[in-house]
Length: 206
Image (cartoon, rainbow, N blue to C red):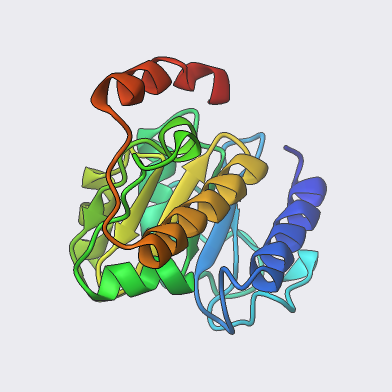
């Protein structure tokens, strides 16, 4: 993705996340990989519904700031995911209400209760709580870094995808699954054989 188009798409995606209440105020951070391997990331401390393309901060994969602006304090776990996953093209970290409700109460998102959860997300690990921006959090995210989506204890949620659209879709689906779980209460998972069948179909949705 070339830089100008990436800046526009990242700003649009931030606005979509904000409009759908998947993030609020200055919470969360989003990034996209450029054609040259560098990344664009949202700036620190800014309302995600009000960002413009020129607000995005350019970084090298080793964390060097290549444009104006101050990157999100959590940029290091974005960089860790890009370094470990060659096919990751975008990372979305938000504080969606229902995901965060599960994350602060020590519960996991159960994505085996609907076909879409199995197909689009698979297993969703929960990363232990560490201070935002800390090296401990970077290491914890990297440990779960092969997952399409993860909860962050006492914090929020994170998704990654090959494109911004894919990372966005996974965040939207993750929040839907969390809301469904909280509304439905103690429901059973799909049968194990159906989960296995759907898991085998996942390549069609990835």
